[in-house]
Image (cartoon, rainbow, N blue to C red):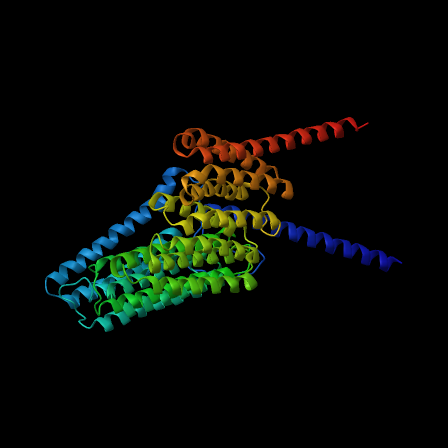
Length: 560
């Protein structure tokens, strides 16, 4: 019995010692976290606990925003300012020796300076973390600048062979990116991507320029997939936009077909491939390490960039031969939207690519038939797009297609308005579209009548215009009265009050035209016909409302 009691006491003591040890360990961890706020980036070890050295490199720096403003400026601001001044000092020193006819000495001074900067960065790695961080960054910048000036932007290049100079620069950038990816240094990787793109721009050969850009884009996509570095991907896209624009604008305008145009055919292919690479983010599964709207942002920004570049490319070099380009774009976008429909976890992506493809088709139709002959095909295409929206179950496609139809109709009326086929096609398409939206409202995820009302308003005004332009003057009022009757009949059949309002609005328009136009212009016989028809339809509608009001009153009195 005594042995059992002693064993129980020993067990209690062991438990208490274990609790005390855990409390001490927890207190040490809290002290470590508090000290990290004051000294970011330094490696410390909790007493009684083994810890491996921090091998994340000098790039993983935490900023202390609790320090006074003076400390921030002194530690961070002066570190950047000092490194910028140091870079210019080394650049000017290189310039001095190079202009003095001593390119080897200039290169040696530059490379030795970069090595010294790296050495100082490593020396300050523990004691001055942020200064070490900035020195490491500028060490790579100095080294890249010195190697760049061995051939590029140099009237007396030390390396005269452009291919050798480009390979040397890419080798240095490749080592830098390899180190950055291995140590998971996001900022250093972004700097490496910038240097790679600038190297591509510097060499300026079309194939080298775009092939280097493609590889850089691929690496940026890899970092997004592997490390969720979505900001780097957007940054690379932003830098690429400006470099591609400068590349396209640097050459003179070519309005006549020349062998030089082949360069810009390749440019179209390469730009399309690069944009298609960015489109791959649509297959990235949701992840807590990057915001969901970053996918949408990348896709929209890539589409905007591609649209701007295509606009510049076509205006400058293919003002008369852009139709094949847009046909190719439309085929790719629609096919890709179908693939996304089945495999992308982001439900909005198929609609975005389908919309871009439909816009490309519209541009190709315009380029083939021009205005106003292309209006009929574009109006019919609007209805086809709406039917495809049913398959995509896309509210976005429906909404955008509605506004595009209205803009197209307004542009047509403003520029031409003389083609009877188009005049009557617009109300027909508006009518059918309104019926489809009402029929498939749930499938399209439409919760209000806003889109349908736009189609009905378009139907009302476009049908008035079509009959006014397409029917002899003496029959205009009669035709409008008949349309009012049709609207009223539809309201009864479909049990929809909106068609009754359209019928009354049509009656009002008929009355104005009858009084202001027909009384002075048309013959007596047609005037009599118009007035009789107006009276009959007005009386019939009036009797309907009287009967409807009586039925409503009767239903009300029957309620107990």
